[in-house]
Image 1 (cartoon, helix red, strand yellow):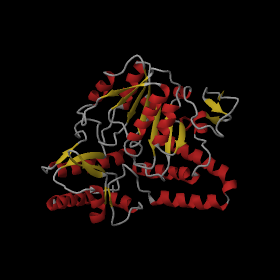
Image 2 (cartoon, helix red, strand yellow):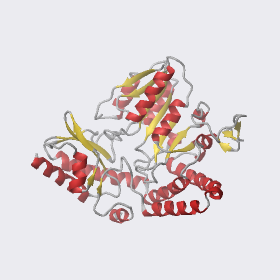
Image 3 (tube, one colour):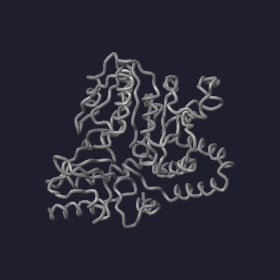
Image 4 (tube, helix red, strand yellow):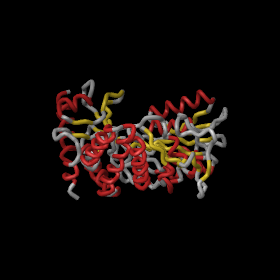
Length: 396
């Protein structure tokens, strides 16, 4: 595979070393061009083009569903995973004293949603205490198993932890939740386009994801997956044109409908949407399917391995992400603690002086840094990062 060819087809600046796909992916030129052309076409007559673009968005939903291993009827388009997880958690019925089981590593925005549900509905939130760098998936499963109770109604967990890059065994956690009569809602912010997914086969009841990160769609595109069984328990949290006063009906195959549309397709009717961005998400899927999901994941692991070898050969970097030998626990996102770098804003220094973009900052025990290695990165960029860090250490 000529990975440099793929890099040249993305919109990244030639002088930029972009190691932050974990926050925002870079558009492939085909995706960018299709998005811009969609905007041009839509704006020629926004009123008449509105229904046409919704039909195209539904076609994009089908392409995305195939990519995610989900029937399109089980997907709602959202703006991002925060919206998706709010729809999942706040869209369920709750009774006082019900329990949500989460880990102690959850992303702040989703943790805020859990806290809001806790206060509003008088719930109990329990925490599975996880090691920073687990050595086996079973450690994660055991931590949740130790905290689940007969009152647990929802297990809420990240699929890939933002702060460490650790991959969680969500299929096994789904089985654990179901054994105890609970549902599972997964924050999959970092998974689509990063690792292959098979949502329908995973056992997850609810799964929210971003498309603008590793899948490299236009910004502001996410999704919520809900299994047919979970849809029976999921309510609108924003009520608009997707709602019907007469309630739901059934298709011949038993699926819930609102009017003549699948139930999930009506949960995302929140008023005006950037429809060209949804349509162009199909192009982002096409690009990655042309490369291959397994090839993308393997390329990420290859670069991560190179980064580990370079940093672990030093005496001043400690990896917070599970070792590659811990099967299934790591791929293209790693986090590090760095010693001997004395700057107030490492993220700003890296970009202003070296044109390197990666999240970083001071913590009590040193400098934290997170590195994304996507298929459009290469070893020369990793070398440049190491050289920059060495120079900052020498200046300290």
